[in-house]
Each structure stands twice: as C-alpha cells, then as structure tokens.
Picture 1: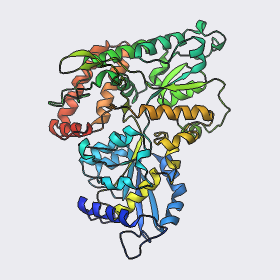
Picture 2: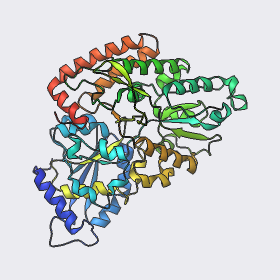
Picture 3: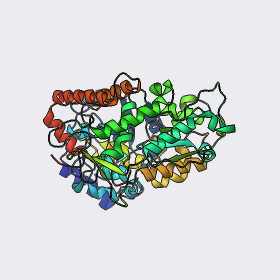
Picture 4: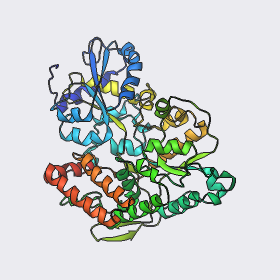
Length: 492
C-alpha cells in the first residue's frame, strides 16, 4: 500500500487556486510551478461497482496521459470494500451517488472549493440544476459544500407509447390518479383497436419496476410530490428525533395507488428492474413504464436490432396539487402557481471525488473535471447502465445515451425531459447515509407484501417504520441524525 500524507483543506484550496491562477492546461505548463505540472505523476483512480465504466475510462486514458504526460491507473473495487477501509488508497474515486454521504461523514473525500467550479473545462453551469445544486453537495446549502463532480444521475421518467395515447384521445398524466386511469386504459386490449398486441402476447398497461431493490425506490418516487411541502424539511425522518415518517398518510396514499396499478398489471412487475421495464416497452410488451434509458442495454443484449416500429415519448412523473404536513398531520393545498412536482434523486448514478489523502489532489481534480466535463464528452459515463446524461450540451447528442434502436428525435426528447425533471426547486432524496441498503430493504419488503396482498399498505408501512427505527437505533441515533441533516443541506 502506498504511503499517504493527509492534506489540510486549506492546502487543497491553495493548490486549486494556484492551478486556476496559472491555468491547468498541459498545453502551456508553467515549469517553474511544481503544482502545475503533472509530468511523470501517476494518478490512481478507484472505480466502485461499475466494471463497464472502468473499462470505458481505460479505453480513453491514453488521451489524458498524452495531454498531461502523466500516467492514469484505473482500479476497481466494491462498495463494501470502499466503506470498510479507514482510508482510500487512491487519488480519486468514482462511486454510486448514494455513497457521497457515508464517504463525506467518514472524511474519506475532500471538499471541492467553489472557486474551482469556474474552471471552463468543467463548465459547471452546463450541469443540470438539481445535480449541481443538490446531488453533489453535502451539508449546509448556504455554504455550498461541493464534494463531487457528476458522471450521470438517472431519474425515473414516465416512458409511454404515444400512439396508444393518441388512439385513446388521452393526455399525459399530470397526477397519479390520471396515471392510474391511463394504465387501466392501456391494459384493456379491446380499447386499443388495431394497435392491440396479439391475444397470446405478453402485455401490461403499465409495467413498473418492483423487483427487489427497486420497489422501495418506485414508492419513494411516487410519494415525493406528496411529501415535499414548501414549509418543511423533514421527508423520511423527523429532523428533531429521527422518528421514521414512512408510515404516515402521504406514503400510505402512494402505496395504495402503486398497489392499484400493480394489481391491474401482471406478476412480472415484481421481477422487473428499470432495465427490464425499458426493454419490455421497446419490445411492445407494455404501454407505459417508469424507467430511464441507457446505451448500456445494447452491450447487455449484444444485438442491434432495428428501429422500433411504434413511437415512444416521455414525460415527467406526475405531481400533486397538495402535500402532507407532518407537523400538523394533515394535507395542505399548494399555492397558485406553485410547482407540483418533486423528483426522487439518489436512485442510481455515479459521482467522482478527490480522495482526502491524495498526494496529488490538484491532479485528481483535473482528471475528474476531464471525465465529467466537455473534453471527454460523457463517453465513459454513457457506457454505464447506472448513469444517464447530465448536461444541457449532451441533449443534442442524446443518441450516445440511449439504445441504438431509439430514433434520434426520441433520444433528444428523452434528454429534454431529464433536464426538465432535474430543474425543479424541490426534490426528495432516497436515503444516502449509513444504513441505506437496510432502510430500503425494509421498505422493499413492505411494498412487495402490499402488492401481493400479504398486508394492507398502511400495516406494511407501519411495520417498515418500526424496522427503520431499529436500524437507526443500531447505527446510533445521533450520528444518523447529523448525517440526515447534512443530506438535506442543513447542519446539525
């Protein structure tokens, strides 16, 4: 294991400031400034839980090495190994976005100074708003504590057969009630006329991804607009005492609605992932689903096929004209003109951070900016099934992020909906602190039990809330509370 010296944050700031002052480009290195030159330096990049992304970076690393006269070594590891170690033996790390909290809390990654965000190669303003303003942050929003650069953060969108929508003379769903009505209409083959699939073909009006690991996230995405009221920060837990809130009326309503749609579908939903869902849509096996698009599907299926024979379109997940007030235990109407939507963040995605013990923090920063910024053009990220496009400039080349069977116009439409989804003023985060997997597993079980009729939705969520409290007690209420505050952009 290589030896490390731990740089103070002030030292890191000075390094970055020096880099910006003289210019980081290797085209005109300032040989008198040892901070600037990367000649002869070997940078170690750790990629977590993503062999496809690691391989894609490996394929283009020679470009970086030629530009900087340095060496880049790409190493793979797992989330379990990353979290188990006291330090990270690398200069930079790319990891699932939900791990930002545990890594920041353990002080394994370094904060990025705000001045660096002005670097033109990163082009920070080009990144979708909620990604740069919320997902890359940890702690006090007013202080702007940025810990990561993005490499693609998927959100669930509603993907549907627009020809069926037109044939039924229906509109894109604006509420979950309208979504349920559309799912029911799509399910009725007799209403679809010549567009109906053969009687012996698999068909679902709406096929939602409720496989283990995903049922909980679909519920949270459905509940998000009910939970996010303008006057409250608490969403998953009570800020004051860490009481779980997932047994409250807003989550129960969301699960009731989820179950109603699932019962009108077929049993496939309980084995369906977002990848399965989008493939089913493109094969003509469902009328609508909740998913994101990924070019990695082509590699997984190892086939190109041909252009899809029916039109696909996208819209944001539905919103709500009212939200639930936890403190008052009642629903409240939104104001006129108030945004009714709140997307769920942290369902997937990849972020890149400087390792706190890096011997070459400015080099690590430059390398991450190169991978995330316009120079690499998103090429490595698009190879990963855990990412999607994350910049406005990528919309015009959205073909790079979707299966090759999807027409360019459809790809650009998808990109525009992703941008729109990530431009709202409010959002809900899936848990992104210690215990995430345990919290979501308990919620997964509740959703799946309710869909299968083992428990009523309210009872299933009450049990999940009890399990959440036990998880918090086991991990320590105080550290969990502090981490939860920071996950919301607050300080304890």
